[in-house]
Every structure is written in structure tokens, then in C-alpha cells.
Length: 158
Image: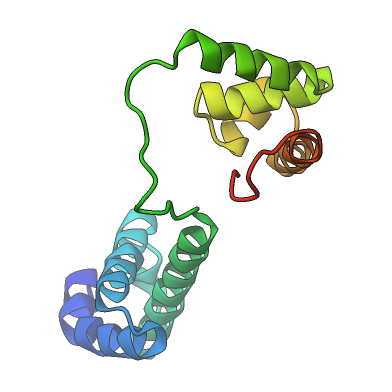
């Protein structure tokens, strides 16, 4: 079967299974599409039997769905009542920030600055500093814990 024939034959079956698995129709549709794109990009299904191709598509789609759910779980949801200022911070805020940063060791200061002033994620910071992203997250957590202990920084700052 060609990929187009597999799509026609198995798309709805895969979609129903993934909706039942995730209880999220949109995420299931995205995962099925991702599986077919993956098959198209790698031309993996040419040598498979129909049942093996169906199984490969299901496992690939389910893995894409799980990966996306894990990504979403890691994202921090902002409180809708929090107002985020769009203008530049005033001089008092910058002085306060400098005072806070001075309380941190140099490696933590760099990470906090890159994260909160430049808006970079841990992977980007890790690439810049030449360290693993897990180390970036650990140092960021340690820096925020130190600042919380020394100031009245709220616990919900991440």
C-alpha cells in the first residue's frame, strides 16, 4: 500500500484510538498528522505489510501525542489576573534587580540574567554557557531559592 492508501484506510481508526487514549481530539489529530509526516519524511512504510504499517503509524502517533502532552505539562501557566507590563522597567526596578543579582554567585547571576532579562529557555542558555540544560535548571532553581531566603520574593516566581 502507498502512504496515501494507508492514510485513507487507517486515519480514522488511528484518530479514534488516540482520542480515546488522550481525550483530546485536537492533540490526537496533530499526532496522527505527525505520524504520517514522519512516515513521508523517512519513507519507512514501503517495505512493511499493511498491519505492520498500521502498527507503526499508531505507535508513532501515540509517541508524538505523549511527547506533546509532556511538553505542555512542563510549561508554566500564568495566572490570568497577573498583569505583565509591556513597557521598559523603571530605574528603581533596575536598581532592585541589580541588588538582587549581586547576592548571587557569578554562574547563577549569568543564568538568571539570561533567563529573565533575555527571555531564553534552559536549552538556549545551556548552549551559550556550554553546560547541559538540566544544569541550567538546577542552578536557576538554586538561585531563586537563595533569593527567596534573602528577600520576600514570592514562591510562584519560576
